[in-house]
Picture 1 (cartoon, rainbow, N blue to C red):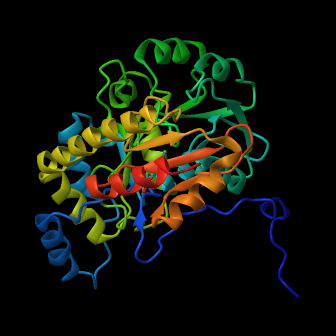
Picture 2 (picture 1 turned 120 degrees about the vertical axis):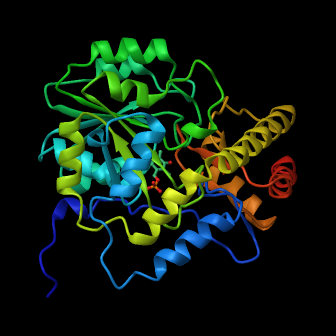
Picture 3 (picture 1 turned 60 degrees about the vertical axis):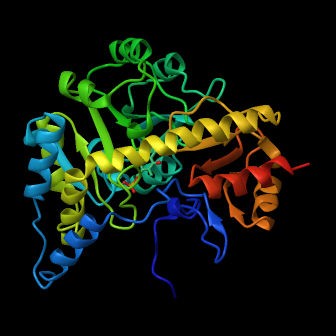
Amino acid sequence: MTAQLRAALDALPAYTPGRTVPGAVKLASNEMPFPPLDSVVRAIADAAAGINRYPDNGAGALTARLATRFDVDPARIAVGCGSVALCQQLVEATCVAGDEVLYPWRSFEAYPIITAVVGATSVQVPLTDEALDLDALAAAVTDRTRLIFVCSPNNPTGTVVGRAALDAFLDAVPDRVLVVLDEAYREFVDDPAAVDGIEYARGRDNVVVLRTLSKAYGLAGLRVGFAVGAPEVAATLRKIGIPFAVNALAQAAAVASLDAEDELLARCRQIVDERVRVRDALLTAGFDVPATQANFVWLPVRHRAGEFAAHCERAKVIVRPFTHPENGGVRVSIGTADQNDAFLAAALSFG
Ligand SMILES: *Cc1c(COP(=O)(O)O)cnc(C)c1O
């Protein structure tokens, strides 16, 4: 007989990673399409020489580097095995069974899974015109609300939260509620009205910002993210993280990536130029595509999401469908110019 597992987990959807299909272009996981920099590969090789030893559990060198780069006290920083691990640690740090985690929906698909794993209750607030509705979100706060995820740019719709709207939202939310600004795509933002979460995390004790090395910095395979927040919150995150969760190669690669930041951010600007080109081509072809500040575009094709993705796959382009009659659509990562051309050819021949 199988051992007894938590019944609440039966209904849990498994996280669906973007699919990798041999010979096809993968635009399904918001990764950078470029190979790692030589300097980063060298740092990983050097670190590999020491992997008979445990990594630095406090990630001291990386934390110090982040503190300098973002001008924050190292006591306000916690690193994690990808920022998704930090999402889970934040829910664990704030919630027990029956507490509520509030977030807009559709948003990052890990939020409902993490919330259920911890035994808390998800409260989802619908988007308005594919964007976060912060007034509706503030209105949904209850006595049981412990944590609110605000994803900007929002995965999968690409929309950002503006400063005035966020200020009003944070003023309306009680200080006892932790607001998590998930900025996995911040480096692709070029709208001057968009928020910079690190400024908020410095100024408000109930705000935590999450950033990742997986997207703009091209280290998705190594798993490094970080949180900036109040020292008490950062200390708790460090306490409850799995020991040695950020491995030695990841720490070395993250430091080397920060050293090569100019080169990596220039790649991001290339992606931003391509994002504009891809969106314009889709709009011209008659698709509805919300303004995006991330490294992907969102096509709110609703019930046709699966059909659209299958059509692209026949053209050897893998995109990411989210099937739902009301809030479904297809998320397409921005790749190299050639990859984007392959996607556009497929999209424009969708009947
Ligand atoms: C990709 C992503 C993350 C996490 O990435 P990690 O690889 O775990 O650092 C977090 N939030 C959002 C919204 C994302 O899209």
